[in-house]
Length: 82
Image (cartoon, rainbow, N blue to C red; front, top):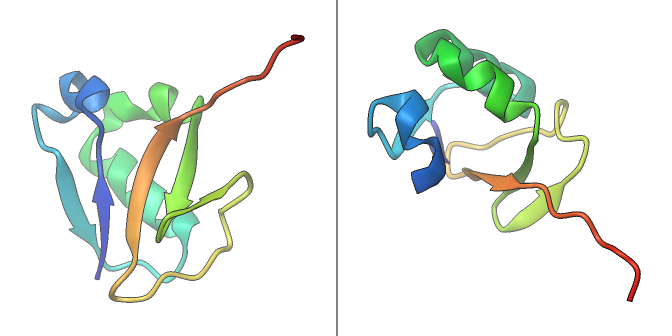
């Protein structure tokens, strides 16, 4: 099962839970399971980027997961002019 980790900024939506394991074949199903368990996370997840096994993915929905996958929710960072 893949493990998803929640940052401390998301603790208010998870009741302090910092990670959970999910049996999901792809990121889309994993995120659906997370929202089912923590419905308050639905809006905050819209502004997060997903990192799987240390690599950030901007469109991860169909990315396959393995039983050893680690998924992190990362706040999106936007660049600016220098």
